[in-house]
Length: 113
Image (cartoon, rainbow, N blue to C red):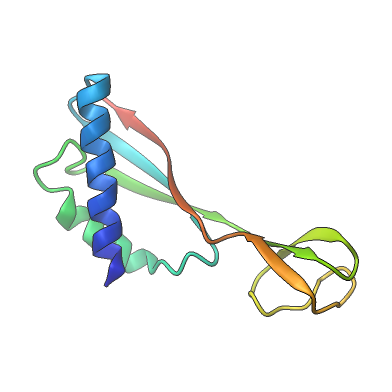
């Protein structure tokens, strides 16, 4: 379950920022998760609650924001939104697509006290 490792990374970032910025508690943590990131959201939510125990983010609300998949179509030379990595171009139907976004996961922001 790589979601546990992802949450351990998030915890490390939260603790580093708590020291650097001087806050004691995170009330809301917002994550942006790309469509192709391979993250199981229910597993991430479960792991988040477990891993954040004893940290400034213990009890924080985890908000997950979905980011679309995007690809460059080399048939029509337009960047398009796609639902699946193997989908054809929704604009021209071409099959020469190079994914350019959708595999990212990052902390967008945190509400802190």
